[in-house]
Each structure stands twice: as structure tokens, then as C-alpha cells.
Image 1 (cartoon, rainbow, N blue to C red):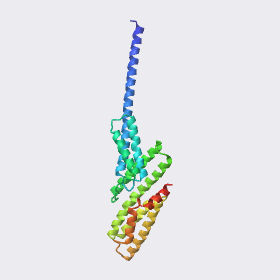
Image 2: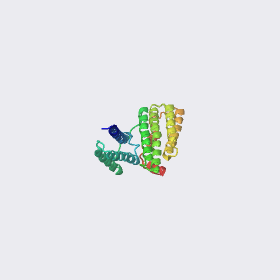
Image 3: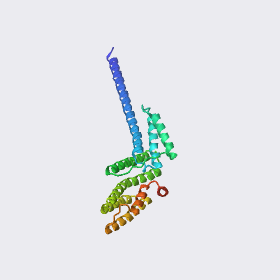
Image 4: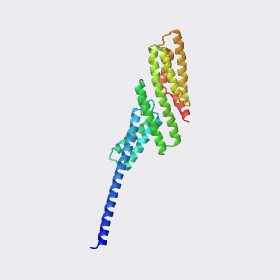
Length: 258
């Protein structure tokens, strides 16, 4: 065997070795990328499920529920195409069942009282995650600009209401204790929070109610009256507790969305 033949054989061996290494690396990169995509979609599904489960029932409108379900459906479709070893079929069936319940107005979720700073901050964090999710769905082309704008505006309004909820709870407690100056301050804080959603007609209605109540409390404080069970306080409490549920709100929200 002459020198040229030996060189050719060695070159072929080196070439084959390089090809095998390159192919092996490509397969490994593909495996890692597939794993990354599966993890990302699984996280997306779980995140949407968490938001559906943990955002207070009074905050989740039909539109928001359907957006979260759509995110779950999109994640399941991606996981199915990746042939992920996960209970995808079970998730899809659960999402479809929930979607039917939502569309038929049979999905009822209990309201959550925002009665501590910790709870207020936690709900705010959930709403911020929802905000980011809707932004991501818009950027990826899953929802159109009009749908994204409407729901992002509403979620931002809910963030402000979460803080107002806490201040209203504190104000009520102060009124029961006849600590009127502290109650007035708490209502001022609630009014400031709702005032951040100036383009929302219902938020402005809340601000007006808070200001009226503040004037009443200031007058009572000046006269030294006990306010523990006043009719005005009871009326404001009822209005606030049904803030996101009454028919007037639904009508005003439709006008606001338009």
C-alpha cells in the first residue's frame, strides 16, 4: 500500500469521524431544544392554570377566563406536536370542559376578600403575570391588537382595584372602631388608587362615592358622632362589594370596552 492510499484512507477516517461527531452534536442540540420547548409550554400551561385557580373570582370576567383557556389550548397543541410524555389529552379535555362551562355561564368562582397587605400584593402579582401573558399572546399573534388592548386595560384597572380593596377594608374596620381620621385617610388612599383608571367610568363612580363618604365622615368627626352603623356606610359597602357583578357595571364595562 503506497503513501497516497494511506493518506486517502486516513483522510476518509477523519472525515467520517467528523461527520459522526457533528451529527451527534446536532442530535444532542435538537434533544436539548425539544426539552426546552416542552418545558416552556408545560410552564405556560401550568401558569395559565394557576391564574385561573388563584385570581379572585370577582376579577375573572368571561373574556379573561377564555383567554387563559386559550393559552392552555395553545400550550397543549404545541406539546402534542412535540410528542411530549405528558397527560396532554387529559389537559385538553379539562380545558374544553371548563370552556363549555364558561360559555354557558356555569363556571362560578367565589370572591376573595382583600383584607391584608400580603393578600393584596399576592393578587397584584397574579394580575401582573396575567398582564404579561396577554402581552405575550399578542406579540406571538395568538390574539389581535384590539383584544389585547381591551383586556390589558381591564387588568391594569384590576391592579388598581386590588389596592383600593385593601384600603376600603381598612376604612370599614376603622369606622367600626370609631377611628374616623384613619378611616378618612384610608378612603383617600382608595380614591387615589381608583383615580389611576380615569378612563374607566365605574372607577370614577367609585371615586365620587369615596369622596362623598369622606365628607360625611369629616362632618361626623367634627360633631363627635358615632358612625359604627350608619346607613351611608352600609350603602357604600354594598356598592363596593357588588362593584364587579351588578348589571349596571356590565353595561358600563361594555361601553368602556367599546
